[in-house]
Image (cartoon, rainbow, N blue to C red):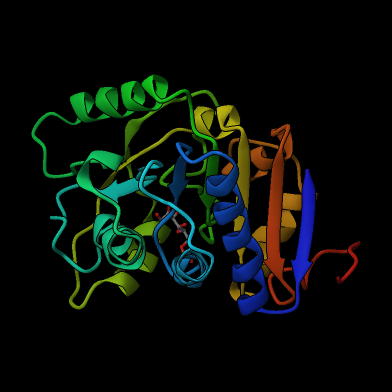
Length: 246
Ligand code: F6R
């Protein structure tokens, strides 16, 4: 696994955005998954800016969502779908036929999971998955204790996730379940990138990079990926005992 430490959030985001744009340049019909949340926000902005500046054609690539809060409608600003549409699909003019998103309002969530798994399989697997990390070590909504070999599934959210998740919503919102890609999707992706910034992530990054690889720390699965990369800013890397700053 590659570990890259950039100076700050800007540099971390630019480095990550470059991976997305370069992939689409070399493989126009690539299948990409980018997490929602605070961490990838600037990466998405940079992807849209570079794509425009360098005239990169995003009309043939595909996107899948990483996860969604069950019961939260897509027009709610706190939903993952709202994030992806606003920060990525709309600026890049991505059409509906290019995306497969979890419908967390569905009465048949198992079918949602099956549809997602089939879409990924039918499109030759995920070429690039970019994930964030929760303070409890979750990836997507793969909470501590999850098995590493799951595909899409529905989960009971950890208390930390329910509490920290309030930051995405205007008003207090009941968040109990999530629907998410599984860690097996991450392992099977041709390239996996985990990004983290800020001092709040320093402890979980230390555990991820230097702790034991275990299901209680889902992010540690990154070290099993044959083409995995963790891209950090200096603050997120500040608790690592042995690292070189670029
Ligand atoms: C969101 C997601 C979550 C976040 C994680 C970090 O789609 O999958 O796992 O990546 O909770 O969130 P932020 O980036 O807001 O710190």
